[in-house]
Image (cartoon, rainbow, N blue to C red; front, side, top):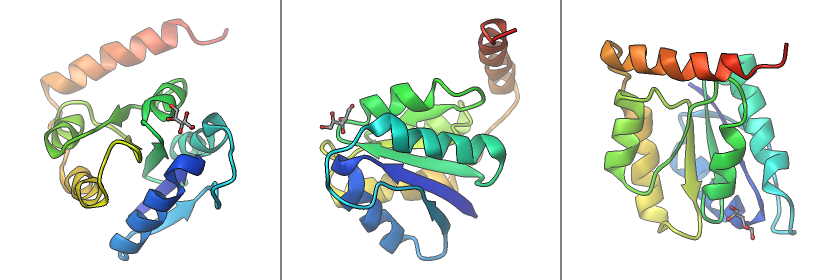
Length: 148
Ligand code: RB5
């Protein structure tokens, strides 16, 4: 599976930990690559673009709290980014919301929990059915605001 992964400076360490923990995943690491202060929209935008273009099936976006990354990723059409702080949220974000970007807060989560959240998110399928109807309504809202 191809997964785009990106973070700001606050998420670099967790990004590396996740890449090391999931050796079987084909990660496209869009940066940042060091702990010099940077702006999360620059890197989270790259994750979103990778997913929208189809270059990556899904994305993982990391910042300090996950909030800035979540706000940024959800500005991109077609992105359903889910900020998850536990495995239940990760599971439900896949089953009910078909999340295509997992957002993590590096300053919120311990490394072991973050890895469990990623594993759960990767392992859980979308249920479709009534949940697809709801996502179609979300997409219709997005489309209604799209530039003409
Ligand atoms: C960076 O200091 C921090 O503001 C950022 O990583 C993130 O938490 C923003 O939402």
